[in-house]
Length: 327
Image (cartoon, rainbow, N blue to C red):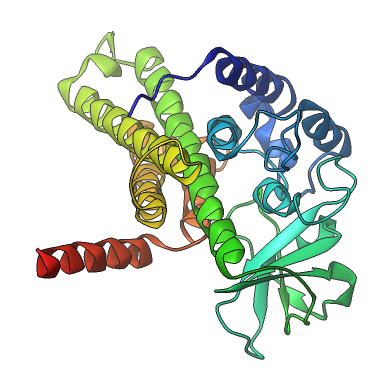
């Protein structure tokens, strides 16, 4: 499979990268803590076409492959707001692609009367409820607040609700399963960006911080840590783009297994690189005003989006077992 991006994809990536550097600069990330996404930034993302990438329009050349490329950039800049769920919901909810409606989301394999944690609920208009074989839309105003949550990621506010009401069914069967697969791929792409961002921070610090008169990046132990971070990023990026290509029909293979591979490797890369970035920055890496903790916490949050590493590893293990038994 050929992974080179074409000119249109490169132009989209560069435009989003420039947008993130301007609107989501990491130097000012602390100012975004515990706040909804800035309305002007959200509208600008809509104008750039980010929120409507999965809307099937005749004039659009966007799809899950292009979305994965864009989401890497958003992940590297720790994007604020319910971007993942809004992009997934845009084909089903009017106004999302234009930036007029924001969408939160929750995965419920079966309906229970247990409390439900919803990220970005206070800033959203609609809730996308993704089940095993059914996708529903309901108004956030219909939710019954239970209590405020204590967010793990300061950029991802959350609220706990007593239950989720029934909503309008917008997808079932194969379409619902496709949405879950796309969600896994795009959350993997965000994790690839998180892993890349953690690597960038660690590398910059290792080149600037001096010990014994030389940059600590010249020490073999630090070189090995950075090399491991780089390998994890590239493996996860390759798996994620492969998963997106297969899901889009541009490659061969089982799309569900490809998505699981992407999420598994990207989750490992995001969490491991976040931890390693903290380690390379030493004692400073544990402090609130340094960047590594943002990447690590965002990776922990995304790890639970559309399947954890253990659930995807179990799916891949079962697939290998079936292949062995049938051979």
